[in-house]
Length: 215
Image 1: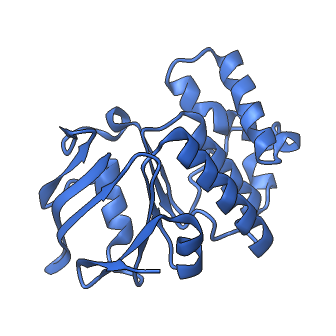
Image 2 (image 1 turned 45 degrees about the horizontal axis):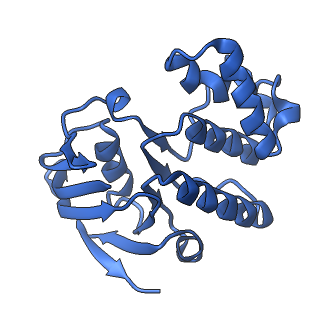
């Protein structure tokens, strides 16, 4: 289980996060909605270990990991801009995390190709990522997020670049994969319909506090 306990963070003189507490169970997707600038991405960054909270703590499986660096947490974080490596081809982008975990390069690339096939991208394996459409790049980023079997997933608008049909297909696929793998997932989205389609429950972040939403 992923737990956020009494997190606080400021943006300049403004209190951006005020005593935020939330738990996400294994295999559960919790959607986080809220207006632009409300602190949703900041909250994900704190959970990922990219920035420290002003106060409060982040826990995983009963252990306080607030001071752990990102690589020790082994969470997969995907922002809207994909953060793909332009100097690597598609296959090596997906294999990158496995290689960083010291898996043999040949095996890592074989697993990456299998993952790309599941996302309908095997034919692009040797292409540079800038040759792909925005939607295809986002699917590569999703594949890369899943392949390392992360302990938690932190997703910031992961389907925003996709057309409606593909978005619906990937939502269903991604939800089933998360549930099968038992990965606690925090999904940031502006789309209430998407939150309802993917998440077991949803909360809204506004004026620094969380409000539980009902479907």
